[in-house]
Length: 178
Image (cartoon, rainbow, N blue to C red):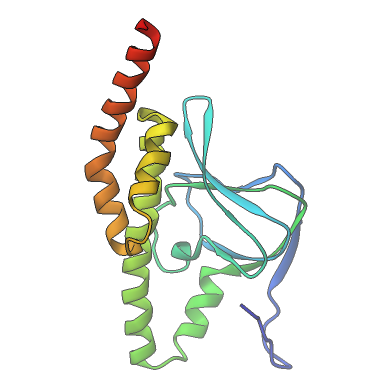
């Protein structure tokens, strides 16, 4: 994703984040998105004291984009994994640019935001479920779902994971009693 600025246009702020710096905290108000220029960022949720990673993002990735159009706090946190340079896009700047856009583009953005919110929610649910299920069950479920379209994987994984997890637990009990 390239970012081009015309001469005379507004300059977006660039920041250097040190490794380990949490720059978006789950549940807190946020009116900014970030474009990763270089480095690596991880998204995560917390389960008590345990940090559960959801994904990693490199250069060209937009982080926290829902904050540009939705007032709700994000359900996940983001931190720099390595020294990372980001370009900050504020909600105010985004909205200002959006007002100069056609209604068709605004409709497309509204639709995309709705889908994005659903996908981010699914990723968060998956991360929380990893706490409840054995990692071997997740690995086995992924093998069963190879070749399944992404839009169907989540529903199928959710349906078969409890059964695979039960099977893995029973197999472990059998091994322990043998």
